[in-house]
Image 1 (cartoon, one colour):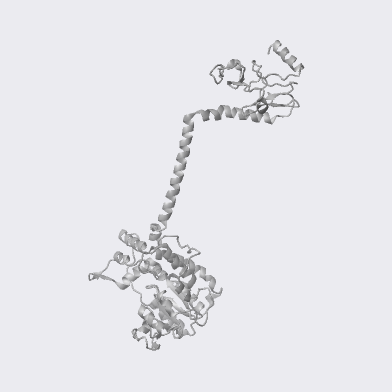
Image 2 (tube, rainbow, N blue to C red):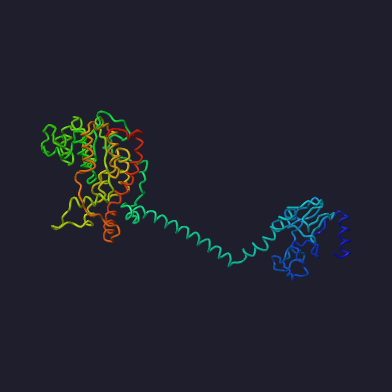
Length: 493
């Protein structure tokens, strides 16, 4: 600064006049520390609204010239420090100045070191300097670059599209997995992964009102309750019938007694039919006409039968009422194994020749879910499956063919049955472990054979709801352990 300028400024200060920032053509209030002599500055020519050049009363700000606001506006954009310095930055208050742009009445600030006159570090100056430099040198150029901003917009739009597409695909795949088979599970363990993989039904699942005549499995057993075994074909039903009738001495209502009765005679009295393998009531509870006749004769209120065997659930509800309730129990088997066993047991014919297993599989469509839900004709849905699950959960004491010893122990403990003699024990062991009524030998499917794999796929697809029901039954079998005493293994059986 020249001597004349210095003297002029001193004169103004002595008169109590604030130094005029706009009258500082020497660059005393430069914002950056760039040497103005080393940079070719291009003055910004300001124009008024008429297009004429405005006055040249400009100051340098960074790499551009900037017009100082009128005195009337300086109050909003400038701050007069306690020491008399004026600050005006990019955001409304001036950015911190360097050593060459520091102005103070007393000249006691040290801007080059960022310290005040007492040597304390001035954090505000550093903050505003960094803020200004980052904004001017990095952010503003990006915002002004249309190609960069276009790329940003395209990137954001692409991300949004990919996210939405991924969400839709995930949802669709999840839905498809609910109704498709899992080949790895199918060929390794003869089961199929479908729907919800053994999960319980929704809490709000309702059962038909006619099933209220069956007691919940957790309710206390009463003297007016009658045990009813749900006979799922090829799942140890015949063996259970022989054990209960011949070994435990229970009076059984099944198809055997119906052989000694006339289902068309509704007036025939209930009588007991004694056979070498047990005692039976003269009704057939395995057919719909037989159930109608048994209901008309008052089978359950008469307390004639101790155990009833039937494949029908909904139809057999006519035998019971709110006073004389039914107690349901059953033995379930892997549905694929059951279908294969049923095929070799029946040996169904087609045009005089034995039907192929794959054709037979198409005739068996989720029989267990149908019987439990009561839907025998329409297409089975997840709603029917949930009703079947709820039926097992609330009303059934579950047994598994793969756990037949444990299952029989639970049945006898639950109903209070026991084998009272060595002869009865031997009878049970013979029929339950060695004779196995209705057993038949047949070749097992080869899981490594492509032809057998195709057959398994057909069976699994046709019975996918039964397979899911069985998985849930396995979980229920584990949960129902809590219904029995800890010393169950010591009970006589």
